[in-house]
Image 1 (cartoon, rainbow, N blue to C red):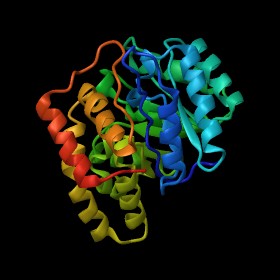
Image 2: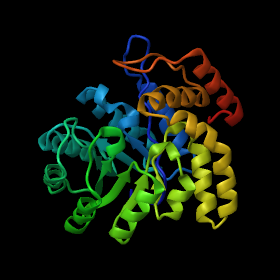
Image 3: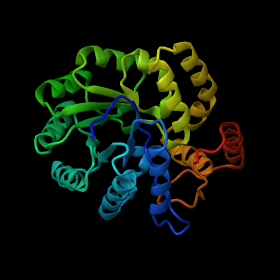
Image 4: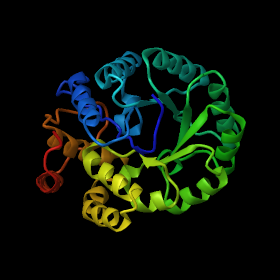
Length: 295
């Protein structure tokens, strides 16, 4: 399915108390998105804790989500791997399973702008599907320069997506340089949502926990009901600010809010994770009561 502008929430990986991956939680999230106003679904990014999943778990996740979506909404799959070969091999398998687009993630070891550009270029040339990169220097500690992102867009026709993790001011500058050649999304849980849209973003890849609100904000803004979009965003902002304080905070409290709103048991953790505090749990309960159930 072709990608269209809009909201593409990132699925969370839920684990049971023995740290086993719960595939049933992916089914609930996929069905929720399929029945929502979101444009599509995203998987295996930072928010999905892909680095904590085995190769077989990541492939099982892609296969399950594609099956559950049943072509009702497109799936964007993030490709994780420390070498071009790893990413190419996983990308080809995800394409075979039926993903609609790929987003390449930088490797874990920091690379210079030049070497990272070469890393992505090698992969892009070998994968025949709409794809892009996740550029998150504020989260990962390194990333591509604006100049390199623009160069990739000019050199490769299948480079169609830039998932940025930056301020709306930075995004607007990149959008101007790209000149509408590719689709630009921001992440950051949906922070600055309406300003990102003003800056030229085609959509947002936020967390699952506010998919109903972010989708409605996008609909209102796209329908020229900008004041109403700003009002709804302002109402949702305290939730977004609480969740998106940093990645560990997001992975604990964003997931907890999503679990509450989806009717899922939060379960347990895998590997290192931020343990929720009593006060943090109280905050999430208050937000759950405020927002209500998703399904």
